[in-house]
Amino acid sequence: MSIDTICALATAPGGALGIIRISGAQALEILSHVFSKNLTNAQPNTIHYGHIVDFDAASQHQEVVDEVMVSVFKAPKSYTGEDSVEISCHGSSFILNKVLELLIQHGCRMANPGEYTQRAYLNGKMDLSQAEAVADLIASTNKATHQMAMSQLRGGISTELSSLRDKLLKLTSLLELELDFSDHEDLEFADRTELLELALQTNRHITRLADSFDAGNALKNGIPVAIVGAPNVGKSTLLNALLGEERAIVSDVQGTTRDTIEDTIQLGGKTFRFIDTAGIRQTDNQIELMGIERTYQMIEKARIVIWLIDTLPTEQQQRDFSERCKEKSLIIVCNKFDKGVAVENASFLIPHASFVNISAKFGMGLDTLRQQLLDAAPKMSDGDTIVTNARHYEALTRAQKHLQRVIDGLQQQLSGDLLAEDLRLVLDTLAEITGGYITPQETLNTIFSHFCVGK
Image 1 (spheres, rainbow, N blue to C red):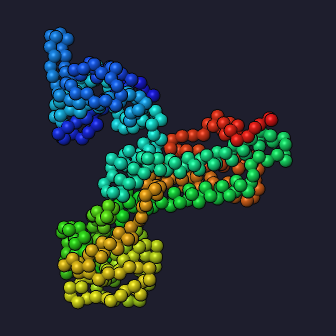
Image 2 (image 1 turned 180 degrees about the vertical axis):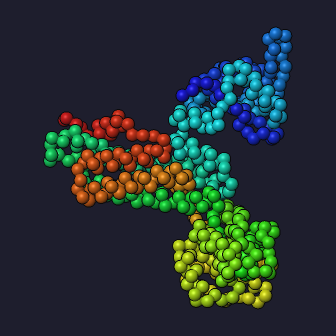
Protein backbone atom coordinates (compact mmCIF):
# COMPACT_ATOMS: atom_id res chain seq x y z
CA MET A 1 0.00 0.00 0.00
CA SER A 2 1.16 3.54 -0.76
CA ILE A 3 2.48 5.55 2.18
CA ASP A 4 1.85 8.86 0.42
CA THR A 5 -0.10 11.54 2.23
CA ILE A 6 -3.04 12.46 0.02
CA CYS A 7 -5.36 15.43 -0.27
CA ALA A 8 -8.55 16.21 -2.19
CA LEU A 9 -11.67 18.33 -2.15
CA ALA A 10 -14.29 16.29 -0.27
CA THR A 11 -17.30 18.46 -1.12
CA ALA A 12 -19.00 19.39 -4.37
CA PRO A 13 -17.72 22.65 -5.90
CA GLY A 14 -19.93 25.72 -5.93
CA GLY A 15 -21.12 25.73 -2.32
CA ALA A 16 -20.65 28.34 0.39
CA LEU A 17 -18.14 26.07 2.12
CA GLY A 18 -15.60 23.54 0.89
CA ILE A 19 -13.86 20.78 2.85
CA ILE A 20 -10.39 19.58 1.93
CA ARG A 21 -9.39 16.24 3.38
CA ILE A 22 -5.78 15.19 4.08
CA SER A 23 -4.90 11.61 5.05
CA GLY A 24 -1.59 9.89 5.71
CA ALA A 25 1.29 9.68 8.13
CA GLN A 26 2.46 13.24 7.38
CA ALA A 27 -0.99 14.86 7.44
CA LEU A 28 -0.39 16.99 10.54
CA GLU A 29 3.19 17.86 9.60
CA ILE A 30 2.19 19.06 6.13
CA LEU A 31 -0.77 20.98 7.51
CA SER A 32 1.49 22.83 9.95
CA HIS A 33 3.47 24.27 7.01
CA VAL A 34 0.37 26.08 5.72
CA PHE A 35 -1.64 26.70 8.91
CA SER A 36 -1.16 29.57 11.31
CA LYS A 37 -0.76 27.13 14.24
CA ASN A 38 1.47 24.09 14.65
CA LEU A 39 -0.90 21.14 15.11
CA THR A 40 1.73 18.39 15.00
CA ASN A 41 0.93 17.44 18.60
CA ALA A 42 -2.75 18.37 18.54
CA GLN A 43 -5.15 16.17 20.46
CA PRO A 44 -7.32 13.84 18.34
CA ASN A 45 -10.96 14.74 17.65
CA THR A 46 -10.39 18.46 18.13
CA ILE A 47 -11.26 21.51 16.01
CA HIS A 48 -8.96 24.50 15.62
CA TYR A 49 -9.56 28.03 14.31
CA GLY A 50 -6.85 29.73 12.27
CA HIS A 51 -5.67 30.81 8.82
CA ILE A 52 -4.24 29.10 5.78
CA VAL A 53 -1.11 31.06 4.88
CA ASP A 54 1.21 31.17 1.89
CA PHE A 55 4.74 31.90 3.07
CA ASP A 56 7.27 33.16 0.50
CA ALA A 57 10.72 32.21 1.83
CA ALA A 58 12.53 34.51 -0.63
CA SER A 59 10.72 37.67 0.41
CA GLN A 60 9.90 36.47 3.92
CA HIS A 61 6.34 37.57 3.17
CA GLN A 62 3.31 35.73 4.52
CA GLU A 63 -0.03 36.03 2.75
CA VAL A 64 -3.32 34.92 4.34
CA VAL A 65 -5.29 32.72 1.92
CA ASP A 66 -8.38 31.99 4.02
CA GLU A 67 -9.88 31.91 7.51
CA VAL A 68 -10.63 28.24 8.29
CA MET A 69 -11.58 25.61 10.84
CA VAL A 70 -9.39 22.49 11.00
CA SER A 71 -10.60 19.13 12.37
CA VAL A 72 -7.93 16.69 13.57
CA PHE A 73 -8.32 12.88 13.63
CA LYS A 74 -5.58 10.47 14.58
CA ALA A 75 -4.99 6.84 13.59
CA PRO A 76 -6.71 4.51 13.95
CA LYS A 77 -9.80 6.52 14.87
CA SER A 78 -10.43 8.20 11.55
CA TYR A 79 -12.34 7.38 8.38
CA THR A 80 -9.24 6.00 6.65
CA GLY A 81 -7.59 4.60 9.77
CA GLU A 82 -4.71 7.04 9.24
CA ASP A 83 -3.90 10.47 10.68
CA SER A 84 -6.38 12.76 8.94
CA VAL A 85 -7.23 16.43 8.74
CA GLU A 86 -10.30 18.18 7.34
CA ILE A 87 -9.96 21.87 6.46
CA SER A 88 -13.26 23.78 6.28
CA CYS A 89 -12.68 26.67 3.88
CA HIS A 90 -14.87 29.21 2.14
CA GLY A 91 -16.24 27.73 -1.07
CA SER A 92 -14.41 29.95 -3.56
CA SER A 93 -12.81 27.82 -6.29
CA PHE A 94 -9.76 30.11 -6.15
CA ILE A 95 -9.34 29.53 -2.40
CA LEU A 96 -9.84 25.76 -2.62
CA ASN A 97 -7.42 25.37 -5.52
CA LYS A 98 -4.85 27.56 -3.74
CA VAL A 99 -5.05 25.46 -0.56
CA LEU A 100 -4.63 22.25 -2.55
CA GLU A 101 -1.69 23.80 -4.40
CA LEU A 102 0.02 24.68 -1.10
CA LEU A 103 -0.55 21.21 0.33
CA ILE A 104 0.97 19.59 -2.77
CA GLN A 105 3.97 21.94 -2.57
CA HIS A 106 4.64 20.71 0.96
CA GLY A 107 4.41 16.98 0.26
CA CYS A 108 0.84 15.89 -0.43
CA ARG A 109 -0.32 14.34 -3.65
CA MET A 110 -3.83 14.47 -5.08
CA ALA A 111 -5.93 11.46 -4.08
CA ASN A 112 -7.12 9.03 -6.73
CA PRO A 113 -10.88 8.45 -7.13
CA GLY A 114 -12.14 6.44 -4.16
CA GLU A 115 -8.73 6.32 -2.51
CA TYR A 116 -9.94 7.44 0.93
CA THR A 117 -12.44 4.57 1.08
CA GLN A 118 -9.85 2.21 -0.41
CA ARG A 119 -7.48 3.09 2.44
CA ALA A 120 -10.29 2.58 4.94
CA TYR A 121 -10.78 -0.94 3.53
CA LEU A 122 -7.05 -1.74 3.45
CA ASN A 123 -6.65 -0.48 7.02
CA GLY A 124 -9.48 -2.69 8.27
CA LYS A 125 -11.94 0.12 8.96
CA MET A 126 -14.56 -1.58 6.78
CA ASP A 127 -14.88 -4.66 4.61
CA LEU A 128 -15.37 -4.63 0.85
CA SER A 129 -19.18 -4.76 0.98
CA GLN A 130 -19.21 -1.79 3.37
CA ALA A 131 -16.84 0.12 1.10
CA GLU A 132 -19.24 -0.46 -1.81
CA ALA A 133 -22.07 0.78 0.40
CA VAL A 134 -20.36 4.18 0.66
CA ALA A 135 -20.90 4.67 -3.09
CA ASP A 136 -24.50 3.49 -2.78
CA LEU A 137 -25.09 5.91 0.10
CA ILE A 138 -23.76 8.82 -1.93
CA ALA A 139 -25.94 7.79 -4.88
CA SER A 140 -29.11 7.18 -2.83
CA THR A 141 -32.06 9.15 -4.17
CA ASN A 142 -34.89 8.11 -1.83
CA LYS A 143 -35.62 6.70 1.62
CA ALA A 144 -35.53 3.06 0.48
CA THR A 145 -32.12 3.28 -1.23
CA HIS A 146 -30.78 5.26 1.75
CA GLN A 147 -31.98 2.57 4.18
CA MET A 148 -30.44 -0.25 2.13
CA ALA A 149 -27.10 1.56 1.82
CA MET A 150 -27.02 2.36 5.56
CA SER A 151 -27.84 -1.25 6.43
CA GLN A 152 -24.94 -2.48 4.30
CA LEU A 153 -22.61 0.24 5.61
CA ARG A 154 -23.38 -0.88 9.16
CA GLY A 155 -22.37 -4.40 8.16
CA GLY A 156 -25.77 -6.00 7.53
CA ILE A 157 -24.67 -8.50 4.91
CA SER A 158 -21.21 -8.81 6.49
CA THR A 159 -22.73 -9.93 9.80
CA GLU A 160 -24.92 -12.55 8.14
CA LEU A 161 -22.08 -13.93 6.05
CA SER A 162 -19.73 -13.95 9.04
CA SER A 163 -22.15 -16.15 10.98
CA LEU A 164 -22.46 -18.59 8.08
CA ARG A 165 -18.69 -18.54 7.56
CA ASP A 166 -17.92 -19.45 11.18
CA LYS A 167 -20.25 -22.46 11.12
CA LEU A 168 -18.96 -23.74 7.79
CA LEU A 169 -15.33 -23.15 8.78
CA LYS A 170 -15.72 -25.34 11.84
CA LEU A 171 -17.00 -28.28 9.79
CA THR A 172 -14.49 -27.71 6.99
CA SER A 173 -11.74 -27.86 9.58
CA LEU A 174 -13.11 -31.13 10.93
CA LEU A 175 -13.20 -32.68 7.46
CA GLU A 176 -9.63 -31.55 6.78
CA LEU A 177 -8.56 -32.95 10.13
CA GLU A 178 -9.94 -36.33 9.02
CA LEU A 179 -7.62 -36.20 6.01
CA ASP A 180 -4.62 -35.86 8.32
CA PHE A 181 -5.69 -39.13 9.96
CA SER A 182 -6.64 -40.83 6.69
CA ASP A 183 -4.73 -43.99 7.69
CA HIS A 184 -7.46 -44.54 10.31
CA GLU A 185 -10.37 -45.39 8.02
CA ASP A 186 -12.89 -45.65 10.83
CA LEU A 187 -12.01 -42.23 12.28
CA GLU A 188 -14.68 -39.58 11.64
CA PHE A 189 -14.47 -36.15 13.29
CA ALA A 190 -17.30 -34.48 11.37
CA ASP A 191 -20.80 -35.82 12.01
CA ARG A 192 -22.32 -36.24 8.54
CA THR A 193 -25.90 -35.74 9.80
CA GLU A 194 -24.92 -32.47 11.48
CA LEU A 195 -23.04 -31.39 8.35
CA LEU A 196 -26.03 -32.10 6.08
CA GLU A 197 -28.39 -30.15 8.33
CA LEU A 198 -25.97 -27.21 8.45
CA ALA A 199 -25.53 -27.33 4.66
CA LEU A 200 -29.31 -27.28 4.15
CA GLN A 201 -29.74 -24.38 6.60
CA THR A 202 -26.94 -22.43 4.94
CA ASN A 203 -28.39 -23.10 1.50
CA ARG A 204 -31.76 -21.72 2.61
CA HIS A 205 -30.04 -18.64 4.04
CA ILE A 206 -27.97 -18.00 0.90
CA THR A 207 -31.03 -18.57 -1.29
CA ARG A 208 -32.98 -15.97 0.69
CA LEU A 209 -30.18 -13.45 0.23
CA ALA A 210 -29.87 -14.19 -3.50
CA ASP A 211 -33.64 -13.99 -3.99
CA SER A 212 -33.68 -10.53 -2.38
CA PHE A 213 -31.59 -9.16 -5.26
CA ASP A 214 -34.61 -8.82 -7.56
CA ALA A 215 -36.43 -6.65 -5.02
CA GLY A 216 -33.26 -4.79 -4.06
CA ASN A 217 -32.42 -4.02 -7.67
CA ALA A 218 -35.95 -2.69 -8.24
CA LEU A 219 -35.77 -0.45 -5.16
CA LYS A 220 -32.33 0.78 -6.16
CA ASN A 221 -33.05 1.53 -9.83
CA GLY A 222 -36.76 2.32 -9.65
CA ILE A 223 -39.66 -0.16 -9.46
CA PRO A 224 -40.72 -0.77 -13.11
CA VAL A 225 -44.44 -0.23 -13.69
CA ALA A 226 -45.87 -0.95 -17.16
CA ILE A 227 -49.08 0.89 -18.11
CA VAL A 228 -50.82 -1.30 -20.70
CA GLY A 229 -54.19 -1.56 -22.39
CA ALA A 230 -56.07 -1.02 -25.63
CA PRO A 231 -55.61 2.17 -27.70
CA ASN A 232 -57.36 5.31 -26.41
CA VAL A 233 -58.13 3.99 -22.91
CA GLY A 234 -56.07 6.87 -21.46
CA LYS A 235 -52.61 5.36 -20.83
CA SER A 236 -50.76 8.55 -21.76
CA THR A 237 -53.24 10.67 -19.82
CA LEU A 238 -52.68 8.47 -16.76
CA LEU A 239 -48.90 8.73 -17.11
CA ASN A 240 -49.13 12.52 -17.31
CA ALA A 241 -51.48 12.62 -14.29
CA LEU A 242 -49.15 10.48 -12.18
CA LEU A 243 -46.09 12.52 -13.20
CA GLY A 244 -47.86 15.86 -12.86
CA GLU A 245 -46.63 17.03 -16.26
CA GLU A 246 -47.36 16.62 -19.97
CA ARG A 247 -44.77 13.91 -20.59
CA ALA A 248 -46.67 11.88 -23.18
CA ILE A 249 -48.66 13.06 -26.22
CA VAL A 250 -52.41 12.61 -25.73
CA SER A 251 -54.53 12.12 -28.86
CA ASP A 252 -57.87 10.61 -29.89
CA VAL A 253 -56.13 9.01 -32.86
CA GLN A 254 -55.54 5.30 -32.27
CA GLY A 255 -51.96 4.09 -32.36
CA THR A 256 -50.39 7.44 -31.43
CA THR A 257 -47.99 5.81 -28.93
CA ARG A 258 -45.74 3.51 -30.95
CA ASP A 259 -42.77 3.36 -28.60
CA THR A 260 -42.36 3.18 -24.83
CA ILE A 261 -42.12 6.39 -22.77
CA GLU A 262 -40.48 6.23 -19.33
CA ASP A 263 -40.32 8.57 -16.35
CA THR A 264 -40.08 8.30 -12.56
CA ILE A 265 -41.84 9.63 -9.49
CA GLN A 266 -41.31 9.26 -5.75
CA LEU A 267 -44.06 7.61 -3.69
CA GLY A 268 -43.68 6.77 -0.02
CA GLY A 269 -39.90 7.04 -0.13
CA LYS A 270 -39.60 4.71 -3.15
CA THR A 271 -38.92 5.44 -6.80
CA PHE A 272 -41.40 4.11 -9.35
CA ARG A 273 -40.37 3.96 -13.00
CA PHE A 274 -43.49 4.22 -15.18
CA ILE A 275 -43.51 2.94 -18.74
CA ASP A 276 -46.27 4.09 -21.11
CA THR A 277 -46.68 1.52 -23.86
CA ALA A 278 -48.33 1.19 -27.26
CA GLY A 279 -52.00 0.20 -27.26
CA ILE A 280 -52.70 -3.49 -27.72
CA ARG A 281 -55.05 -4.23 -30.64
CA GLN A 282 -55.31 -6.14 -33.91
CA THR A 283 -53.52 -4.18 -36.65
CA ASP A 284 -51.69 -4.65 -39.95
CA ASN A 285 -49.50 -1.57 -39.46
CA GLN A 286 -45.95 -2.90 -39.16
CA ILE A 287 -44.67 0.04 -37.11
CA GLU A 288 -47.60 -0.26 -34.70
CA LEU A 289 -47.01 -4.02 -34.46
CA MET A 290 -43.42 -3.33 -33.42
CA GLY A 291 -44.73 -1.02 -30.68
CA ILE A 292 -47.15 -3.70 -29.47
CA GLU A 293 -44.32 -6.24 -29.35
CA ARG A 294 -42.36 -3.82 -27.15
CA THR A 295 -45.42 -3.58 -24.91
CA TYR A 296 -45.26 -7.33 -24.31
CA GLN A 297 -41.53 -7.03 -23.61
CA MET A 298 -42.19 -4.30 -21.04
CA ILE A 299 -44.77 -6.52 -19.31
CA GLU A 300 -42.04 -9.16 -18.98
CA LYS A 301 -39.62 -6.66 -17.40
CA ALA A 302 -42.13 -4.94 -15.09
CA ARG A 303 -42.71 -5.84 -11.44
CA ILE A 304 -46.08 -4.09 -11.46
CA VAL A 305 -48.53 -3.97 -14.37
CA ILE A 306 -51.34 -1.41 -14.58
CA TRP A 307 -53.98 -2.82 -16.95
CA LEU A 308 -56.01 0.19 -17.99
CA ILE A 309 -59.52 -0.53 -19.26
CA ASP A 310 -62.60 1.54 -20.09
CA THR A 311 -64.96 -1.37 -20.74
CA LEU A 312 -65.31 -4.93 -19.47
CA PRO A 313 -62.59 -7.07 -21.13
CA THR A 314 -63.49 -10.21 -23.04
CA GLU A 315 -62.83 -13.60 -21.50
CA GLN A 316 -59.96 -14.11 -23.96
CA GLN A 317 -58.34 -10.81 -22.91
CA GLN A 318 -58.74 -11.82 -19.28
CA ARG A 319 -57.03 -15.17 -19.92
CA ASP A 320 -54.22 -13.47 -21.85
CA PHE A 321 -53.49 -10.96 -19.05
CA SER A 322 -53.86 -13.57 -16.34
CA GLU A 323 -51.22 -15.71 -18.07
CA ARG A 324 -48.83 -12.84 -18.89
CA CYS A 325 -49.05 -11.34 -15.39
CA LYS A 326 -49.25 -14.47 -13.27
CA GLU A 327 -45.94 -13.62 -11.58
CA LYS A 328 -46.53 -9.84 -11.52
CA SER A 329 -48.41 -7.51 -9.24
CA LEU A 330 -51.40 -6.63 -11.42
CA ILE A 331 -53.62 -3.59 -10.86
CA ILE A 332 -56.75 -3.39 -13.00
CA VAL A 333 -57.65 0.27 -13.45
CA CYS A 334 -60.99 1.26 -14.98
CA ASN A 335 -60.62 4.76 -16.48
CA LYS A 336 -63.07 7.52 -17.56
CA PHE A 337 -65.12 7.49 -14.37
CA ASP A 338 -66.00 11.12 -15.21
CA LYS A 339 -67.88 9.83 -18.29
CA GLY A 340 -69.89 7.33 -16.29
CA VAL A 341 -67.59 4.41 -17.16
CA ALA A 342 -67.16 2.17 -14.13
CA VAL A 343 -66.95 -1.46 -13.17
CA GLU A 344 -68.33 -2.07 -9.71
CA ASN A 345 -65.95 -4.89 -8.90
CA ALA A 346 -63.45 -6.28 -11.36
CA SER A 347 -61.69 -8.59 -8.88
CA PHE A 348 -63.55 -11.52 -10.43
CA LEU A 349 -61.65 -10.90 -13.69
CA ILE A 350 -58.28 -12.03 -12.33
CA PRO A 351 -58.41 -13.11 -8.65
CA HIS A 352 -54.86 -12.03 -7.68
CA ALA A 353 -55.30 -8.50 -9.12
CA SER A 354 -56.33 -5.35 -7.24
CA PHE A 355 -58.85 -2.93 -8.77
CA VAL A 356 -59.75 0.77 -8.79
CA ASN A 357 -62.07 3.11 -10.76
CA ILE A 358 -60.41 6.41 -11.78
CA SER A 359 -60.63 9.44 -14.00
CA ALA A 360 -57.09 10.09 -15.24
CA LYS A 361 -58.26 13.32 -16.87
CA PHE A 362 -59.62 14.83 -13.64
CA GLY A 363 -57.44 13.00 -11.12
CA MET A 364 -60.28 11.04 -9.51
CA GLY A 365 -59.19 7.85 -7.72
CA LEU A 366 -55.46 8.50 -8.20
CA ASP A 367 -54.74 8.52 -4.46
CA THR A 368 -56.20 5.02 -4.22
CA LEU A 369 -54.08 3.93 -7.19
CA ARG A 370 -50.94 5.40 -5.59
CA GLN A 371 -51.64 3.44 -2.40
CA GLN A 372 -52.12 0.25 -4.41
CA LEU A 373 -48.77 0.87 -6.07
CA LEU A 374 -47.15 1.22 -2.64
CA ASP A 375 -48.86 -1.97 -1.46
CA ALA A 376 -47.49 -3.82 -4.51
CA ALA A 377 -43.93 -2.49 -4.10
CA PRO A 378 -41.18 -4.61 -2.52
CA LYS A 379 -41.19 -4.31 1.26
CA MET A 380 -38.18 -3.58 3.44
CA SER A 381 -38.36 -3.86 7.22
CA ASP A 382 -35.80 -2.57 9.69
CA GLY A 383 -33.05 -5.15 10.06
CA ASP A 384 -33.72 -6.79 6.68
CA THR A 385 -30.66 -7.59 4.61
CA ILE A 386 -31.40 -6.93 0.94
CA VAL A 387 -28.81 -7.56 -1.75
CA THR A 388 -28.55 -4.69 -4.24
CA ASN A 389 -25.09 -5.28 -5.68
CA ALA A 390 -24.77 -7.44 -8.82
CA ARG A 391 -21.32 -8.62 -7.72
CA HIS A 392 -22.73 -9.89 -4.43
CA TYR A 393 -25.60 -11.62 -6.23
CA GLU A 394 -23.23 -13.37 -8.64
CA ALA A 395 -21.06 -14.59 -5.75
CA LEU A 396 -24.11 -15.86 -3.85
CA THR A 397 -25.36 -17.84 -6.86
CA ARG A 398 -21.93 -19.44 -7.26
CA ALA A 399 -21.89 -20.29 -3.55
CA GLN A 400 -25.29 -21.93 -3.99
CA LYS A 401 -23.92 -24.19 -6.74
CA HIS A 402 -20.92 -25.22 -4.65
CA LEU A 403 -23.13 -25.83 -1.61
CA GLN A 404 -25.56 -27.94 -3.64
CA ARG A 405 -22.62 -30.19 -4.56
CA VAL A 406 -21.87 -30.53 -0.83
CA ILE A 407 -25.49 -31.52 -0.16
CA ASP A 408 -25.50 -33.98 -3.06
CA GLY A 409 -22.15 -35.38 -1.90
CA LEU A 410 -23.40 -35.92 1.65
CA GLN A 411 -26.52 -37.66 0.41
CA GLN A 412 -24.36 -39.87 -1.83
CA GLN A 413 -21.94 -40.48 1.07
CA LEU A 414 -18.90 -39.18 -0.82
CA SER A 415 -15.48 -39.08 0.84
CA GLY A 416 -14.44 -36.24 3.13
CA ASP A 417 -11.76 -34.90 0.78
CA LEU A 418 -14.36 -34.16 -1.93
CA LEU A 419 -16.74 -32.60 0.59
CA ALA A 420 -13.95 -30.47 2.08
CA GLU A 421 -12.99 -29.13 -1.35
CA ASP A 422 -16.55 -28.04 -2.16
CA LEU A 423 -17.02 -26.54 1.30
CA ARG A 424 -13.83 -24.55 0.88
CA LEU A 425 -15.15 -23.24 -2.46
CA VAL A 426 -18.32 -22.10 -0.67
CA LEU A 427 -16.24 -20.29 1.95
CA ASP A 428 -13.95 -18.68 -0.61
CA THR A 429 -16.91 -17.52 -2.72
CA LEU A 430 -18.71 -15.98 0.24
CA ALA A 431 -15.45 -14.31 1.30
CA GLU A 432 -15.29 -12.54 -2.08
CA ILE A 433 -18.26 -10.41 -1.03
CA THR A 434 -16.52 -8.92 1.99
CA GLY A 435 -13.02 -9.03 0.48
CA GLY A 436 -11.59 -11.62 2.84
CA TYR A 437 -10.31 -15.17 2.40
CA ILE A 438 -9.75 -18.25 4.51
CA THR A 439 -6.11 -18.74 5.48
CA PRO A 440 -4.53 -22.07 6.50
CA GLN A 441 -3.79 -20.48 9.88
CA GLU A 442 -7.51 -19.83 10.43
CA THR A 443 -8.23 -23.48 9.72
CA LEU A 444 -5.60 -24.54 12.26
CA ASN A 445 -6.89 -22.08 14.84
CA THR A 446 -10.41 -23.44 14.41
CA ILE A 447 -9.25 -27.00 14.86
CA PHE A 448 -7.28 -26.29 18.04
CA SER A 449 -9.91 -24.02 19.55
CA HIS A 450 -12.50 -26.80 19.51
CA PHE A 451 -10.43 -29.97 19.93
CA CYS A 452 -7.51 -31.32 21.79
CA VAL A 453 -5.39 -33.11 19.19
CA GLY A 454 -2.82 -35.63 20.45
CA LYS A 455 -4.14 -35.75 23.96
